[in-house]
Image (tube, rainbow, N blue to C red; front, side, top):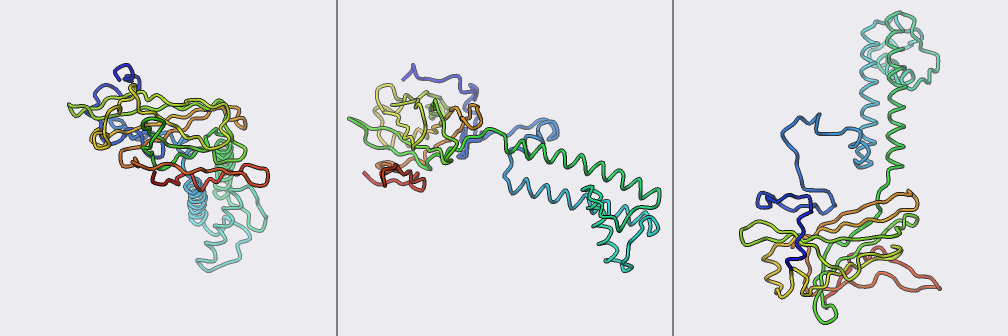
Length: 304
C-alpha cells in the first residue's frame, strides 16, 4: 500500500486545505484562481474555442446585432443629409433602413440604393467596413479553430461499480468512443485515488489495473482495479470504503488518427457515484455477421 502512494498528482502537499472533489464529473479541475484581475487570468481566445456551441453562436449573433445598432445610431446622429436613397420618413421606418444599411456596410455587401454622400457618413462607413472585415476574419479563425481543435469523443459511465472479480472484488467503470471515425489507438488509462487520512487530510494512491493499455479502442472498455494486497482498499468493508470518502480520477490518452494527434479525457468518481453489489451489462452483440455496439447501454448495470 505504501509503495503505491502518489506524490506527483499536481495537487500539492497541503491536502487538508483542499475543498470538495479534485476533478469535476465532466473532467474539469475543481480549482478557482483568485488574486489577480479577470483580464489577466482569463483567455478570451481559449474561452471562445472551448465554450459550448450554443454560447459561441449566441455571442457571435449578439455582437453582430449590437455593433450594427451602434453604427445605426451614428448614422442617425450624422443627420438625414448624410445618406442618399433613404425613402422612409417616419422614425422607425428610417431606423430600420439605417440598420439594414449598416449590416450591408458591415458585411461589405453594399446593394447600392442607400449610400453615404456626406463626409462624416463616409468616414463612419469606412470605419464600419474595416471593423466588419476584421470581425469576419476573427470569426472565421475562431470557427476554424473550433473545428480543427483535437478533442476526445469519449464517454465515461456515470457510476463506478464494486463487484465480484475472480476470487475477490474490484472497482470497475467503463468508457467508450462514441464517434464512428474518431477511434483511438494505443489508448492508455491511469487511475488515482484520493482518500481521507486520520488527520482529516488526504492522501493519493496509484491504482493498479487489470489492463491499462489497449491497442485499439473500437468497443467499450471496462477498466478494472482489482482490490488485492496492492490496493489501498484491500481488507476494507464497504462501510470502511465509504468512511474513506474516496475520489477516483481517471485519465485516458490515445492517438486519434483523424486529428493525427494525441487526445486526452478525464473523469472523476466520488463516493456518491459508487454502486456496491452491481455489475455492468454487455454493450455489444452479434447481428447479421456484424458486431453492434449499443452506446445507450453505457450506464446499464444490474445487481449481482
